[in-house]
Image (tube, rainbow, N blue to C red; front, side, top):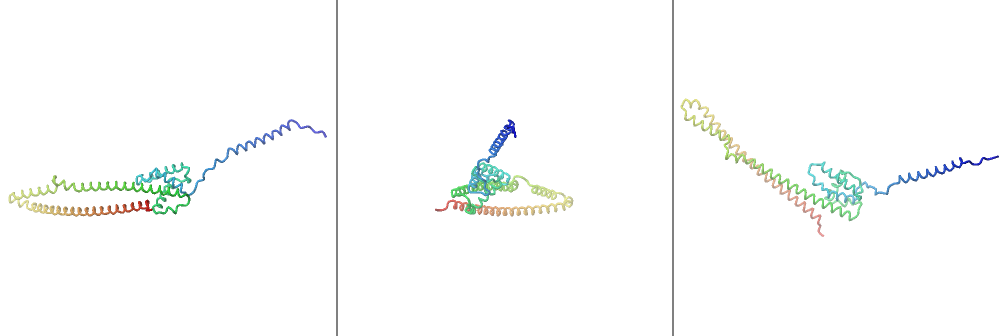
Length: 274
């Protein structure tokens, strides 16, 4: 049986199949190259390690959040958000935590260090890292104490000035009485003058105003009694203020004594005898 030789069409279709196969292979190769995984990065940890604490404490030492005015919680959180940005930019920081979590971690470190319990937190890290972390914590605590002492001294100065202004205001009416005639003194002068007028008047006029004279004398006596009563009450208040001032001074002395003992204890811990 006669066979028809292969035509150019059959050859072309075979070549086209090879070209298509090569094209698919090239596309697969380019696609796989385009979706290659970038170089391996250090995986993030879920829990803080010693190096993470060091990076956090370095940032806290730089930003000094304890200088934020008391009562401005938003200000403190803003500082810790900035600290979170600073830590996140450090390649040695291996956790992804917001500012609130970093603030909690910092407070935990401070609390455990003051309780001398930092050894219980040594789970991952080297001896050098733990020593650096402890040094940073000790330095931060010292700076915080100095700042708090400064604020306390400023508050005491303000309170002393306020008490001094209060004493001046309380003493001002007493001193002003020396150069200023009070209503009570004017009333006494008027009553004395009326009494003299009534005495010099005639008998009829005297009978007419006798009742008024007696009443004025009675009012004068009552006014004198009230003055003496007010003077006694003022003296009692003065004695009470002196007692309160003595108690406040005693309380301040006790507070300073306790603060001195606390600072001495911290310094003794930071400088142990060899």
